[in-house]
Image 1 (cartoon, rainbow, N blue to C red):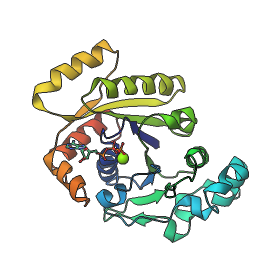
Image 2 (cartoon, rainbow, N blue to C red):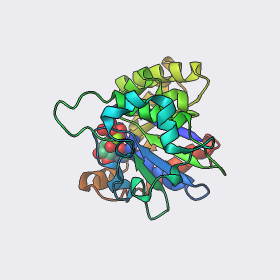
Image 3 (cartoon, helix red, strand yellow):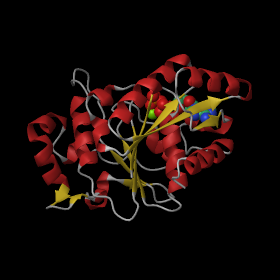
Image 4 (cartoon, rainbow, N blue to C red):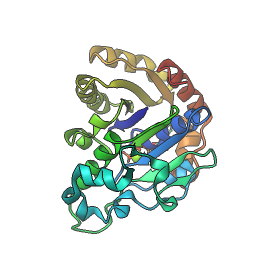
Length: 253
Ligand SMILES: Nc1ncnc2c1ncn2[C@@H]1O[C@H](COP(=O)(O)OP(=O)(O)OP(=O)(O)O)[C@@H](O)[C@H]1O
Ligand SMILES: [Mg+2]
């Protein structure tokens, strides 16, 4: 199962990716792919070392379009078997204490380095040509917004887990995502994050007005907030319980 975690900036995509990965890692081999070309918090909150970027394995960002899908797949896969993430050299992934493997596509670091399009192309190619076995799960923590949608990255996944926070704007973005994702024949789940007790009803009303189905909500959890502020392993009490409930509703647990 290949799941992309998407949504507006700052809604909690990376945090939710970590909690979902932890919950699913109890019964599955879980890979997390960091596809955010600028943010660097994910390894810290997952509690894994930052691995070398896959784009470097392929010779750098500048070579990606030139290589194209066929050559990228050839470079990453054994003949005819599709891409197995565990066959990449060890420095291109790291592990959390739970055994969750972390991989990263690449980061924009230099001024004037150009756009992130090669990263999206690489991610799309990777997802489309992955060979998953024995119920393995791949979770992709995406960058903010929907640029990846414009690049067709979602074509390679099975499902999109959209994260909204309690703002009209982020629900609107989730609606756009839903329309495209459902059209592609993929599963779509929406989670509203950072919900405080007084606003549950407003969210349900807004979502209904917009024709959005909310799979579940994730409470505002002060422990989560503090661990992201410190840049350390994500601690979550209430938040983790909410994620388990959400995953059960999506029949993922
Ligand atoms: N349930 C929650 N309770 C409290 N704080 C939360 C919760 N979820 C996320 N946060 C906080 O919201 C902020 C953004 O979270 P996170 O980095 O996971 O979002 P993101 O969508 O990945 O952001 P970006 O778009 O920048 O990648 C962080 O300060 C994080 O601690
Ligand atoms: Mg993030």
